Amino acid sequence: MRKQRLLKLIHLLSTVWFALCVVYILILGLRQAGINWWLIFSLSGHSAVIFFLIMSVYLFAVFKGAARSRKIVQEYPLSSTNYYMAFYDTVPFLGGLAGLSGIIGMRSVTQFFLEMSYATLGATFLVWIIIDPLIGIIETLLPDSRQHRSERLAQARAERQKQQHAREQLLADLEIKEKTMRSERQAKLKPLSARLLELVQDSGDNYKQKESEVMDIGVKACRIGGLDCMRQLHEMTMTQFRSKDQNTPQIDYIAQWWDGIGGWLGQPLSEKGVL
Image (cartoon, rainbow, N blue to C red):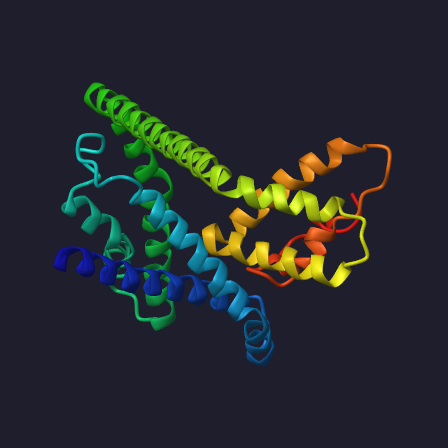
């Protein structure tokens, strides 16, 4: 863990150094082109956020590309080592140090920093954009790497298939359990369904009495198995009710009278009203 944190810190510092070198080269180029300082700062003030955002995203993508799956030593025997990652992260600093060899005898501070910035930019581009991806490609072409990758992918596919099978088995078990519960509830609900059917088919004037008894039956069903039990009882009753006379519009009084019992109020409107 300490090594990984140290590598991340080095990468962060090298990224900052690389960005400073790029900014220095841009500013010096604008100055040599005769652009005044106030214009440079006004341009940088409007574009600094976008510039550093793009730079950060770019460098993060490069770093993630270099660190991709390289914890798998069998597939990346070189680039997965801490020594390589340390070299990778310190490339901007190494490029700056290499630039010192070309500035011996220079008296201009501006030229001094410019050479260091160019060396940093060149070394970083060479290693991060060209050499590192090339090494990664070569590593993936090695026989041991290819074999291990094939085995790893096959194992991952097998694991996904195992998980899929477990999910399907769980759904099948839940479906069987639900069917068993419905079958058990149906035996308990038959007397209630028969009484509900009688009340619905009754054309007498005792409307309030029928409504009260239907509500009592709904409460009993709710106590037996909650909203699912009420729906099952409603389905059993209305199936028989519809089969009596299919040509006459049939009003679902049960759903209306049960409104508010056991969450029945939350039913979709399509499950209530005229059938």
